[in-house]
Length: 126
Image (cartoon, rainbow, N blue to C red):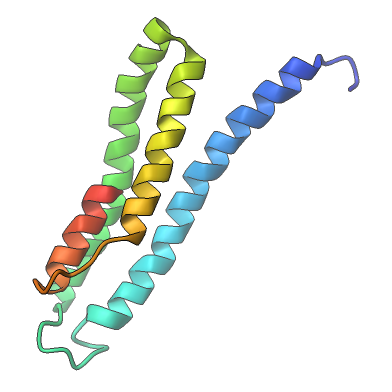
């Protein structure tokens, strides 16, 4: 492998998988926001409990901000923990959190409380 140890390539691949998961998450939420706007925005649906343009804009900004807020808090918290507990343990923990958050995001429901309940759950899961 052109003079680079196999363990170096392994590290690059592991770090790259973290960047890939992060980028994929940010890419997917754009599509989700579009679908949710089609389902819940008053300009696109005839639902009685639809969301006006201001509520949809607030939801879009909250979902985007939730991802960035989580990234900053995660870097501060898990960076400190990685220094104390080791990078491998923390990398596994953060990967697990991403998987759990993704599954929970897929399972959000209205529970008869309307779209604002569903959207609030989605923001929390992000």
